[in-house]
Structure formats: structure tokens, C-alpha cells
Image 1 (cartoon, rainbow, N blue to C red):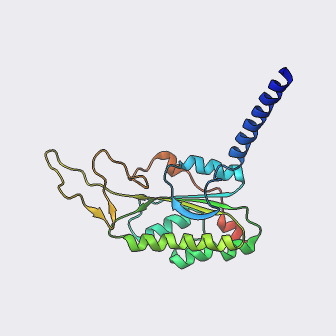
Image 2: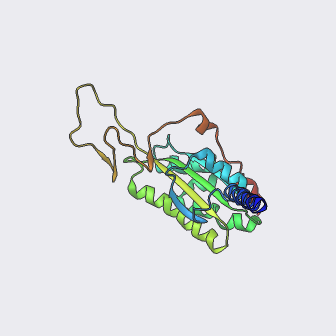
Image 3: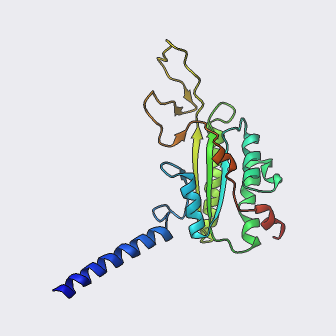
Length: 214
């Protein structure tokens, strides 16, 4: 009886240990290998840690200060450490994330974060979809080659200050993104907040190096 109890305890402990180990080794196990999705409840630091645990490249871009399509392209190229010709167009961005990298040598996988994608008239809904489509196409490209490519994104919504005594009877919308009422939080969009941590965080992945040896 004592031996049986000990065996059950040992098995339970072993299962717990193996479960914890699996969780540590597969921090994104519930996320498809090749996907572009809202960041939702994920924290950037957790995604970075997950990439490190899996041995994947981690690329981060904070686009809160971008005011135009060109700003978006320039900031992605700079913060992803891509060659500057990447910022010429969306097609150039796609090209940089696909064939040259594939030909440069084996790639372990990618975790990318596009935080605070602008949501205003100078970077409207169509532009945002075009940007995300580029990353979706890149995800499909790497899927065909059995390489993980996970991209997480969030939108920035600029809210104008409301003067005391003023009330908005019809809250404005930013190209289909509804500004939430007071007390509600948008699950997929984030307000502009350029924190020192976000500005310090950059990708350890130097695409310029890999492209130069391709």
C-alpha cells in the first residue's frame, strides 16, 4: 500500500515536471507555426523570451511615431536591422523577408512583433491591410519551407483630449476601428505609449549580415 502510494506520488510529480518542461520548451504551442495575428494578451517581453527559448529570431518594431506609409517602412527596416532598400515599398519588404534569407542558410524560425501600427487617415485601413498581407504572404512562404513564422501586431488609436463639460454623443471611428467608450478596453488595439523599454528593445537578428553573405 505504501509502495503504491509512493508510485502514484512519483508518477504525479513526474507528469507535473514533464508538463512544466513541455510548457517551457513550447511557450507558443497553442499558436500556429505560421500565422499573423493580434498580440491580444501576449506581452512583448514574453514573446521575446519564447523566441529565445525556441532558438528563433526575434524581430520587434514599435511604429507609434509613424505618420505615413514611408515612416512605417523606414521604421520596420531600421528596427528589424534590414537593409535600407527594404523601405522602398511593401514588395521590397516582402522580398527581404523571403528568398534572400532562405538562400543565406538554414533559419530556425521567426517571431515578429509590429506594435502600435498607426490607425489614422495617413495610414488608413487599406494601408494597414496591405502591410499585414505582406507578413501573411511571408508566413505562407516560410510555411512551404517548414519554417515557423509567427507575427503579432497591435494598432495605435490616437484619442483627442475631451474638454471638461464636453461629451461625445457620437464617438469617432478611425477607418473601421471604433474608439471605445470610457471604461472599456480594446482587446486588440493599444493606445500610443512609447515607453523607454519599448524604445530600447530591438531585434538581435541582423538581416543585413545574412543578406550580405547570401
